[in-house]
Image 1 (cartoon, rainbow, N blue to C red):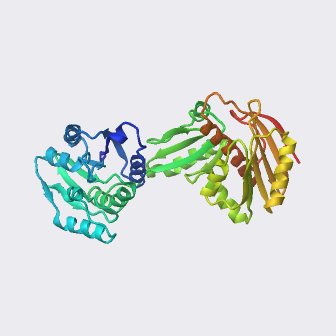
Image 2 (image 1 turned 30 degrees about the horizontal axis):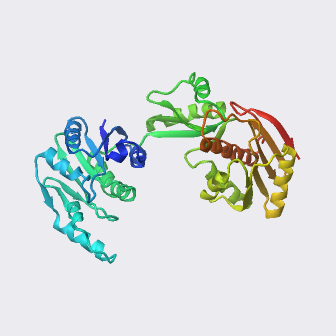
Image 3 (image 1 turned 180 degrees about the vertical axis):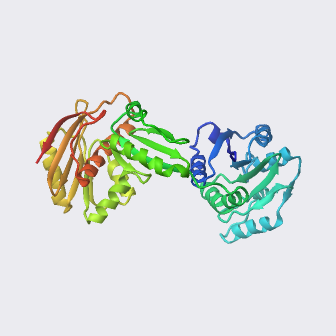
Amino acid sequence: MIRIEMLSTGDEVLHGQIVDTNAAWLADILFQQGLPMTSRTTVGDSLESLIDTLQARSHEADVLIVNGGLGPTSDDLSALAAARACGVELEMQQDWLAQMEAWFASRGRVMAASNRKQAEIPANAELIDNPVGTACGFALQLNRCWIFFTPGVPSEFKVMVEQQIIPRLKAKFSPPEPPICLRLTTFGRGESDIAAELEPLALPEGVVMGYRSSMPIIEIKLTGPASQRVAMEQVWQQVRLLLAECTIFEGTEGLPALLAGELTQRGEQLAVSEQYTAGLLYWQLAAASVPLRGADILPSTQETLEQQVTRTRELAAQQQAALALSVGSLEQETISVALHTPDGGFGQRVKFSTGRHNLETRQKVVAMMAMNMLRRWLHGSEVSTGHGWIDVVETVRQ
């Protein structure tokens, strides 16, 4: 099996000052191409640490993708570290320097002298084009390892990986058919509870069941070789049946995107009213292009569940929307959500502890609860129902 590793660089990554989204994206796209990543390392802006890490990984990995450190500032050290690790000098790439100068000139700017270092790569390296930025990439061989150096800017990094690096890897290694990864996302049950139910399932050889918990959802993944597709589908049918009550979507599109597709297909629009979620629900729906008719954000107001269901119906009429969702206020560790539909109004009040998570997470949970009510109605399921940790204490139907 090919050993592909990633080396992320920069103090801001090492110390957690930014989230390394490039690493997650790279792992995902390599997996999809049948070239799964084996491991990842992070090193700060230290020349000695970079040199040591490059030399150490070059004896272990077949491929190493280095990200970051190709900029014009003094803490951008990847090219120099690569040259030192290989025992060669940096060489100016005159064609790339001219391209950089033209790039700045086309934008009415004069290139700073500090940018010249972005055209310097190790003497034994192959230049890799960067069509959307000023930092060229490069590739070289060190010991057993083929090392690629890439810019840290996500838009530049992704283009370079997709257009330059993956084609090279496929040409050299002829990877097998990509593994299969079946996914579904649940809401309302704990990870250990789900795992206890799925653990007795017999898995085909080489197939792994995985769990990813990210409040308020848990994603279930069944991953295995393409040769086990039929057997995996059979297991997946059992997973679907066992988790039917708490499953909110399959695949990776997300619940807001699922609602957007179904409402668009039905030609129906949605109005939204929020108290506790303070606009988060509307933002999540709008970001997924859900057909929204109107929305309001209200201060916390005490009202009965009956009153909230009535208010939600009036909102739909006012906005001339077929559907309306409302989130009430937090009252005595309960939260209320109401849904108006052409079939009538539904309301539920749910026990809601505020002790375990911060406000943002709690708002995400409630927004998901509201969207799940709408999903259940669209799919013909019981709208107001408790399961797992969702404890419904009151329901209303109008």
